[in-house]
Length: 160
Figure 1 (tube, rainbow, N blue to C red):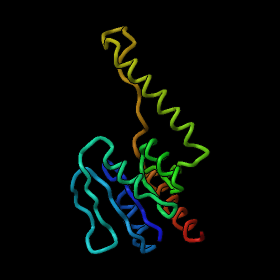
Figure 2: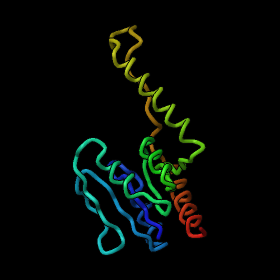
Figure 3: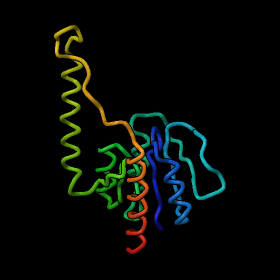
């Protein structure tokens, strides 16, 4: 049976997940380090894990299967889930695939190195130090792309 696993801490598309899951009558597990409100009475459950480093990621990776759709922005978690055959989507609707994950992991490493080198410089005038831009703000277009991508992923898994 298809199941949606959501890396729920800071996930901006939980309502969209609920909508698609309800339409297709699919169970959803929200995985978080703390309790938060979620719709009751349906196929949605909240799995609260410890606040240990990567506890939510570890729980999701251990429970992901080829019949899972994992929603996460975490590239390393995406890679772990792809390794077991799960379908993985970012909250922008961008799918993580076996073909794209290597580049995403490499880019993540480069950006982490860049942030650490910029962060170690002085932020004084003319220092060249300071801020490295992050991702673009989440938009209505991202939300729409996510809804479409999740619907397509569900339909693809239903077809086998």
